[in-house]
Amino acid sequence: MIDGLLWQAKACEDLGSPFSAGLLRAAAEGRLGPVDDLFAVWDGQGLGAHIRDATPLRLLGALHYLVLTGEAPALAALYPEASPGIDGPALLAAAREVLATQRPAIAAFMASPPQTNEVGRSLCLAPGFLAIAARTGLPLSILEIGASAGLNLRWDQYRYDLGGKAWGDAASPVLLAGDWQGPPPAETPAVTVVARAACDQSPIDVTRDEAALRLEAYVWADQPARMARLRGAIAVARNVPASLVKADAADWVAANLSSAEGVATVLFHSVMWQYMPQRTQNAVSEAIAAAGAKATRAAPVAHLRVEPDPSREGFPMAVRLTIWPDGRSFHLADVHPHGAWVRWLLD
Ligand SMILES: C[S@@+](CC[C@H](N)C(=O)[O-])C[C@H]1O[C@@H](n2cnc3c(N)ncnc32)[C@H](O)[C@@H]1O
Image 1 (spheres, helix red, strand yellow):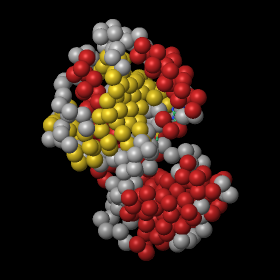
Image 2 (cartoon, rainbow, N blue to C red; image 1 turned 30 degrees about the vertical axis):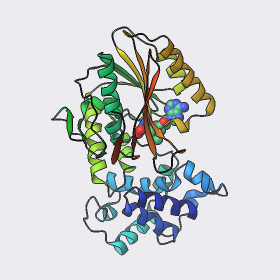
Image 3 (cartoon, helix red, strand yellow; image 1 turned 90 degrees about the vertical axis):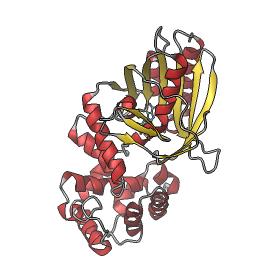
Image 4 (cartoon, rainbow, N blue to C red; image 1 turned 180 degrees about the vertical axis):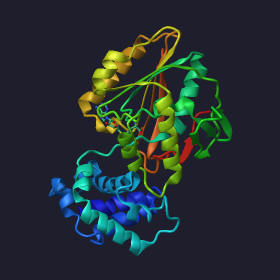
């Protein structure tokens, strides 16, 4: 458990959240009081189980949730959202107090897997959709697997700075602008999304305030820009309808993915492939290949994905596109896990 807390502390530091790293280190060193019982379910399972189930993030999420719901006002006053400088000793004392007095709520929060939906990934998905629209000249019908709350399903409702090229609705509450490396995308046409549908094995309905707060709780408290774009995307999702159903990706793709005349059908996903067992991955791959085989110029099919690429050190995620009827594949970009930078590769 201590190894898990320290491993996650290092990851938070590497991903730009010194506040989260500090809290996790304090927990590992016993400065938040005893926390072992909160991790009892994973006892004896080793570091791998803590990383797989993101147990330290559950602890961080639980504290942040109580801060956001107003149930821990003294701690909330010392969190970075309210307090510009971090007062270490006072913060740790307040966190210790919350852990001692709100144990059942914290344990209950930690019993469910983390729920995240990273809107920053739209920054690298968007130019992929734009490339598909430019190549096919057609409106898009988009389908997402592992969509979480479906926030990236509304990618066309956000505004972008794509390496100096602006795209999207200037009035959108969500601005996506990372450190863009390489040339801007060559193609930035106007795009019409005519249908948007998605599945997740645990979908999140952000029209429910409790669900929206759970998503917010998993944003690290010292990353205000991420929080702002999440809140903006939740507001957009509440206005822009999309079908999001509870289903396993293999079943849903088999039932829903097929080419259609007059639209480019795009199946996409981000950071979900690794969570599917091999047989589900195979079934999804086969369904995509079958839909691709039936594609025509008037009814093209595309597969756009942002997934970790562990075989390539230093490039944590790759954006790839395959488009039929040709079946050509493109490595579009390498990206930071939360969209902080994009290294665009396609000419
Ligand atoms: C790390 S989250 C990523 C969510 C979102 N795509 C994003 O980029 O923010 C992974 C998502 O995949 C979903 N998932 C995992 N296995 C799945 C499966 N077999 N079928 C459907 N969804 C699945 C999880 O429920 C979770 O919402």
